Amino acid sequence: MKQLENAVRDGACLLNLKAADLPAIFQNAVSQLVGQGRLPAEHRDDIIAALLEREGSMSTAIGHAVAVPHAYLDVLAAPVVVFIQLARPLNMGAPDGIPTRFLIILLGPTGAAVEHLDALTNIARLMSDDEFRYEAGEVRTQQELLEAFKRFHVRSDPIPEIDAEETIPESLRYSGRLFGGLINDLRRRLPHYASDFRDGLHPKVLASTLFLFFACLAPAVTFGGILGVATDGYIGAVEMIAASAM
Image 1: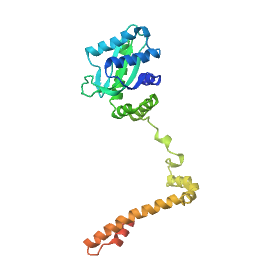
Image 2: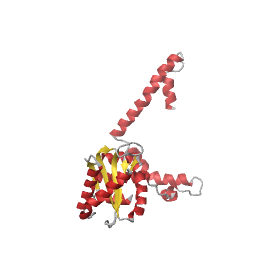
Image 3: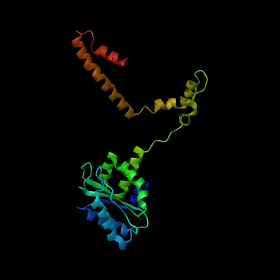
């Protein structure tokens, strides 16, 4: 995952690419990587040909509108990754029948295939997330795509365990004395009791209080009238208001 994120952070991404076929897609991707100095310019055509040859033998579409084209050549010195978002999906014969919208191209030396196995696993995990795919389809800038990565990590990464004892204030911890916790809590809150009432004397609080009052009163009056008819007046609005108050 980090390899893909770092590639996007370094500018190895094409967003809203208007290309109608694989040769045009690979041409745009390789040209950008050559321009960034990530790929040797003299082997541009060889790299494109290797990608097309691999795609010709078997589609690299893995489903969920994602394809992972890859090629490994001795002329490449280090692994390279590029993320592509197409303006219009392309039918690449995916197993689930969904046209491909995202291509993640993996390039590298001949021995890099093993290193890319972890990358493939992470890519499959990332792109199987429906929310990330939706966000990745809407992004228009590199920064927006990086933000989508961050939100994916927030959703999927495990939350670190926190020692419950460390999060409890000293005044709320078990004291070992009868009513010790209650006494400690009163001491803790004592300096704030006056402000609890004073801060509540505010027009916004009054407006919210009146709204809630009538929001609770209206149903009681309404159902009280209905019950008055149903019980021949034995239970009416007054009884319903008293019951609601209790």
